[in-house]
Image (cartoon, rainbow over all chains, first blue to last red; front, side):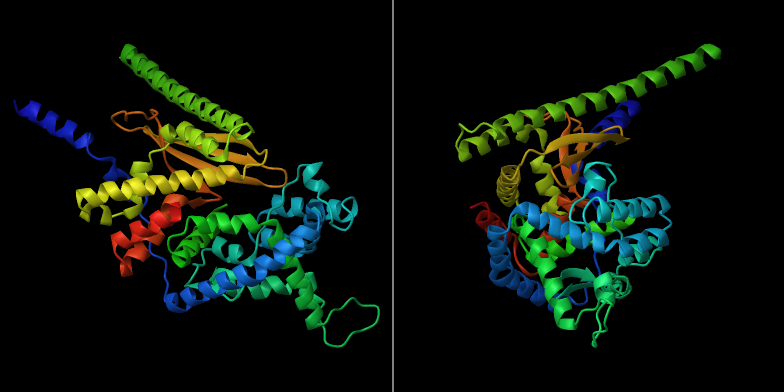
Length: 240
Length: 198
């Protein structure tokens, strides 16, 4: 009789709701968010800037310039930032990836006509390994710190924000900024830099307009939604 | 002694095999579903609404949207009245269906590849897939579980979460709902879901 009871309890216990079992699996830790007030305001600002300025400009540009050209522009800028991918791969001990990045740079800069095309991927099947300094710090166990929404740039956190400094120190465009133009050395002024950078952003955006809209469709509360997407995405990138 | 050992070995091999079959079957089933969806997407004779409803009919048995609705609310779920629970599930399911059809709408000849199948637990299977497009590929992970009791009009294995580029949609919903509910009520949340469904 006793045995039967125990068995019964066991059976009932086992067939209980799946809810409990999954709750523990999906337990998410709360992100540190002391700046939530500011972040919320900045998210609405960015969203407004996107809806009323960036999107119209990017869609106009998309309507005029053929997709293949815009892809090539995007490839060109990607190729330019090879040094920062190379260094961050090395810093994380990902030697094979650093080597493949180098192969990509050599192939795309030559056969790919200064990086306008990506034959490394399409013909040689060498994939890109994007790494930035934020990922490098994350790799060595540096936590993300508080979430910060940057003006126009969008979601970030303290670690990734600070990492922009060493990353831009390796950026070829950033390196060639100088106030006085010297002869025979490629240099650009701050205004030119801002113009080039805006162009690359608009170009990239023109290739991804639908993506932001699709993400926004699922948002009930835009700020925490974007914050969570960003932090989950970065955690995954660092893990890889 | 040896006999017993052999028996255990056989039993082990047998269960391993069973699992392998389970995984293989699920993978096949998943790819079949995708093929069915692609056929409909590419059928130009259908109106958009008709197409979307057919796609939902194919995909719905694969997902446990009800469970996702519950889980997305976390601890709040248990505090809701029966009526609110039903209402919330209904709206959440509608929202998911709409969200899926809108994603499928942007389909552009991508190819779905299953890269890996994992079974972390007896009643969990994870399909690691790639949506390979012209220029980039998107890694999408489908997380399945096997309910203890089979559900009406549902597959044996059900998707309870999808991860796109490492972002779990269930976790993201959980995060935004939690924050929303800190200052607003569940009824306001349901109103927003209805608005999103329009």
